Image (cartoon, rainbow, N blue to C red):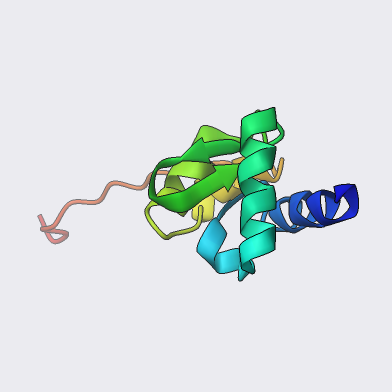
Length: 96
């Protein structure tokens, strides 16, 4: 059974640590194994059928709960990329 549990954990890792169980396309046996992983503390259960590895970034979990992904500035921070925000303010009436 441990091999199947390891496979499920690897699939969750492949989704950056958080995923909806239905997106993993689990069969009944695998679904029960996922429930056991939650009970053992290897996975954390969240609303709407989302599970995550312990310690996964909260923004990623929230994105998965709402069926989305993290993008742009937040994704750059998540992946450890340098992100410089530049704001440009202009007047609507440029001729004055």
